[in-house]
Image (cartoon, rainbow, N blue to C red; front, side, top):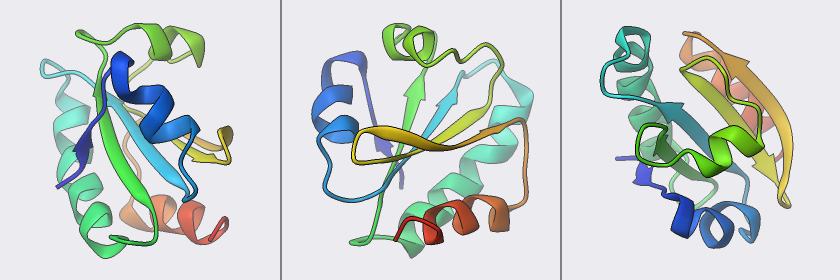
Length: 105
């Protein structure tokens, strides 16, 4: 399962990570988010130990969603060394997410 990331843990979990980090910005009421969620969970399992995969509920945690210009959800950002290296907005096939991780591993 993907890690739950909050505004309080974002800095430590995402920005200071020594591994690539995939962050799925989502909300419970968002239909497309419910389609992406299981895919993100699969990616989390497959990349365990190689990348950090987490989710940010934008209703409860708005600080970093605003900071990174997340206006539409789902938005999946990939971070490497605290910097965004990939941004995917909307529903995408799993390969799009895994390719983005593989590019920075």
